[in-house]
Length: 105
Image (cartoon, rainbow, N blue to C red; front, side, top):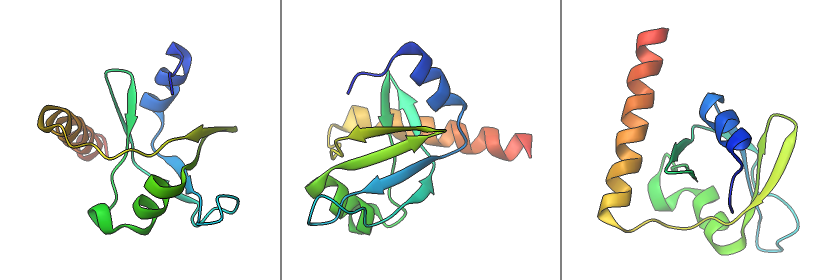
């Protein structure tokens, strides 16, 4: 998915997004929970607390789903990231976000 500049600004400003992966029937959501996200090079990333064993990760990568940001809902494809440079960029973005959150509380 390609995000507009306005959507990127909203994603970067959001404290969380609602994560809504589909179940096996690809019609009903298995979860609707808030998650931290980061934007790197115009792409949205999120991580499961239990890594690839997270239920939403398993269902999302198999079945797709939606995210909700504010009052807008978006259909998304969940894709695993394996490129080491991309993983590092996302890790760095998460660490910067965590440091920022700690400093602003």
